[in-house]
Image 1 (cartoon, rainbow, N blue to C red):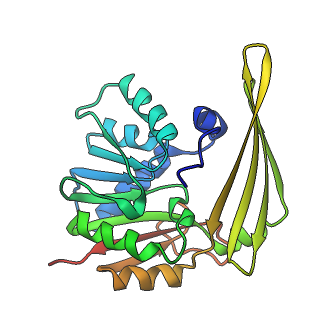
Image 2: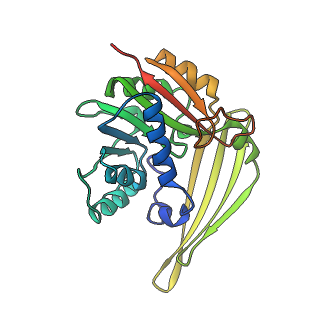
Length: 250
């Protein structure tokens, strides 16, 4: 994923203005209460441009944002530098399977289908590393684009635009590889001309059953599955599924 989110990075926030980050933050705090934890240090895994990282930092958490994209992190660092926090967030340029923190965190969140970007054969290492760096009893919360959603994206074309950027993307689902391929064409304004950028992204259709078993094998327990930003069970037609798990006590 290191060659992705290059052309998009400067415009990512503009193109995702509809993402309810404050609702995500509220939901995570509800999960923390449900698991009876009061985290002090939280890892925002695949933090992107750091919007959620900064929002949680403003709420008083000591935040670590990690992402494999240098371009997205550059936006995150600039964003954080323009705001004031009780404790300034720390940003790390690390892949999920190469996560290497200086100590443990009390909780980890991974928002907006970051886990979908990890191939199934790499996910065990991701969960193994999270077990190493989440403190015993700590909580891991993440969401995925459901297999139902990814399969229904097949052949669809989407358009996003602002005054300075025009983005069109097509999605194609491969049953053989069990993943969805996205082709992006991004046109952005540079002075008096438009410049074109292209990117290809891949999201894997991980099932909740597969992820639950993998979490158990890598030291997580007390696993719960929720619908989109709700503490209710997901529907069969749910587009986004949230999974929360507790790191086993040593």
